[in-house]
Amino acid sequence: MVRNTPFARNLEGTPAHPSQVVRCWDIFSPTQETNTVWQAKLAGSKLANYMLISSQWRGANPDPIFEHGELPRYLSNTTMETYLQTDPSGTCLGCHAGAETAEGAFSDFTFLLRN
Image 1 (cartoon, helix red, strand yellow):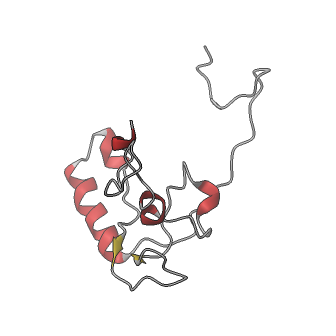
Image 2 (spheres, rainbow, N blue to C red; image 1 turned 90 degrees about the vertical axis):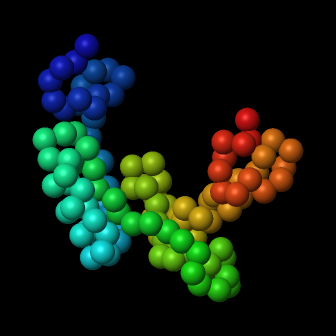
């Protein structure tokens, strides 16, 4: 087991090139204030390193740009959806709006009812 940095390695065991991921969108000031409060409360724990980027909600009238009325328009997880940050599908509500039950009925934005 490799215990020295860099931890990311290719199949041959040599260090892999680090990714150059950059978040495209700023954190809104109210969200940053929330982060500051909770990071202080969680000081000394691993969770103090967590940072909320944003929350998405329905607030706009659906149209070709805001298909599901989502605000802010673009919101994606940079670790799992790195290349969707500016893609029309790069939206939490846009993806979860397609969640269905195993029978194909709308499942209120959760994929858990599919199984």
